Image (tube, rainbow, N blue to C red; front, top):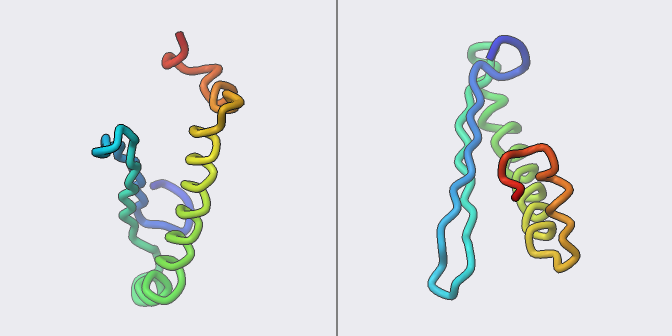
Length: 84
């Protein structure tokens, strides 16, 4: 990272088939805060919990949109190569 509150920040999604024909999405988050010992303290006391909650809420939106029978997911893929 060049700017921001994090020294490094990596977030990945992994999609795996389930035994019942569904899909499970897992997140992997790895980050380091700036500001030496203060950053380490903030990471342990605040940032980890905040980012976990943030990603859980975001994942709930992804799930709702992906499973919506309305086809709402299509508007998110308008400018990608995934559209047929």
